[in-house]
Length: 318
Image (cartoon, rainbow, N blue to C red; front, top):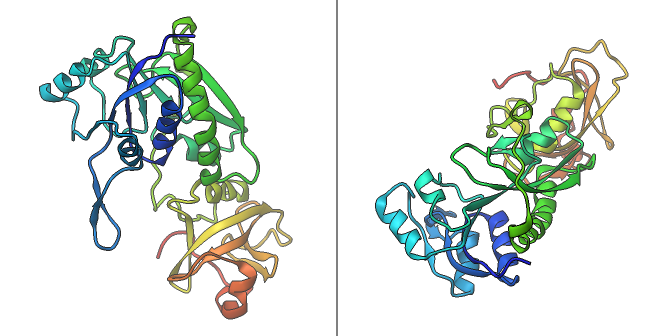
């Protein structure tokens, strides 16, 4: 095993905090934590610390919250810590080459995909959106590119038919920390593998506009979208001019394939069935404006008229 390392950890959301906690439970030493500045949150817009900062404070670890790492002061501050290695997990700030060169053993990153597939901001969501059969985490050496560094370790995870971004996120938050500690424990004995650039894909950020259900798309793709966009931004459609969120749906064979895409062909306790270009999408869980997500059966009890068979949902926002 590699001797215990002095680590500077950089991360921000819950996913990062889970990795930090695992490092604190390991034989390695976390000497400082970098995280994003506190952000306004809640109705009162009170400044709130990141999940990573909360873990650091609970363990009396010094916290640094620069708005950029590109300044001379930021570089000097990091260099003064004399870290053996820097671990970066969903930090949110760009690390310039001058910063990457500071730790004696460089900087490593935990990325939520099997690289080089799904480099970028939304790898978990895009794996579902594309219908991938597996995902995982890659531990890589960082360079100046976007998730282009040499790979030290990959942990693979099958994607189940019922998985959403929320469930995959939770699963990767379990296997990621294990993979990270394995790499740190064996750092001196691992060989880094270059990424195959010909297999690289980019996971662009999600948008609320993209989450609108276009009934001209295949039913299978729409069902993937619903899973990928859960819990954010959540797939949506419009019913009687109101925005309605779709939390759960599945692709089915349409009984009347000649229906115009967007046509409601059935609405009962089993779901609201909407025609697509090649079949139908059975919507099983909805959220009406100002309400909580509910099973379709419960919604139809009070809003059957909203989902009349034969009515047509729009193919684009009105």
